[in-house]
Length: 581
Ligand code: ATP
Ligand code: MG
Image 1: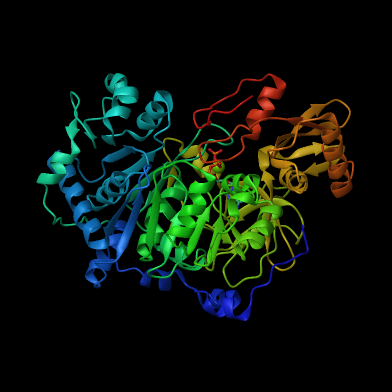
Image 2: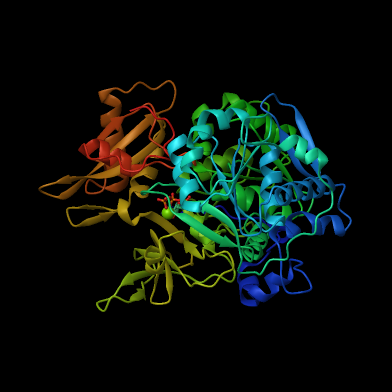
């Protein structure tokens, strides 16, 4: 914990969508939140109507909904009206090719406009949309298509030939494949079908409890789970975009996540559009100069990114920032991993505002705990629960129930079930799903604590907790202390079994450019950690690595560091981004 709270000015507070957290919470009901979306007169709804068509009906058809930046740098704008027509066309194409309501439509696409049109068009047609990372190899693709029972797939000719063609005979449910840019045997040419399709489509009116989205978890702790979400989730997407990301109609908004994981859909497609912002989509991968260029040239107002990217920007240093003008930025947020206090403070120094960390999971469908725009930020804290969300830190009692802990005590982060975007199941894993709900709580599997002011602090995944000489040590605390060292770019901390003390703390560190992995530096870092954390908690050993193993969504895979350290099987590595060992 750190005491250097970043306070918000009165002006910033009154400009925020939620200017007072406490009074907003007191007045909040999910019924009111539901009233902020349209729905249909028959009580049904559709995520895609809320995202696109309702803005056209309200007279905002000419506003740019999506600005797509190709790898080449070329920009293409799609207005809400154009997006409405294109998604109608896509829905018509699905119908013509026999894709029915309830069918599972997968995408295997880079961040191109086709992906966004396919997602929203599928929802219009009442299909269940499931986005896959285009960088996945054939095995992760096959297993996810099998688990979800994919009926249709939208992909490119190149990806099809490289990754799908040979799998077709193993995927009997996969009846229809659309190629966005070419032809191949047993596939449909999407471009020509779209050209021939009608601009009008009678959008499916969905029961709020009907499934709209299937997302696979990141695979940080083990085999990815298939998480089911329903159309009602849009109520949470919308209100969290409004409150936790402070989105205002007409904002320029950039979510850097790929729709291959849930952030890229909930906050890279749905929430921004329901909140009627102009969203930036960049086809290219991370690049320091390119990212700063986009923030500056597109005059981004709200930026939602992830700790790994922030650490890479920090690693690039001050040169890349020289002469930049980020005066359009109003709000910056981060999700996916614990955000080290160091990164929050860096953001405040460089951009004149802190990164606002928020916490949620594929299972929660939307942001649950956040640093809201009007709230003071305690660097290193995830913030406070969303209005309408009851979050608690619970521990197991003797009779295997759950009791709330005292402030500052560690426990499992739990939520009272019932919010609109809560998962409705793990596909084919009913028992595992049921196990998440105990004693009236949804149990997240994350360890955290709550301070006396009601701020939540992440400690670690329950599997990552280190037990050493009678201490329980959360890896995040150790990682954050090491991140303060000027030479550290990235760090992952694990516990290694030890006969005497149970486990010893070991850290893997990637260095910033210009720092050599010397023994002196290693000892200096251990010394720094000891000073900050005390000898019982500080790492006993530090190993230097070029890079740390991470998931494609940018999360450090501590379980892989540990498996490799101990020579154990690596387990499911389908989401592993290539790393250096
Ligand atoms: P899997 O469940 O397959 O192991 P995963 O949990 O990483 O993968 P996601 O649903 O993408 O899959 O990630 C949710 C998890 O990410 C949370 O449970 C939490 O551990 C971590 N996380 C997300 N946001 C934060 C945050 N702001 N601070 C700390 N941890 C976070
Ligand atoms: Mg998880």
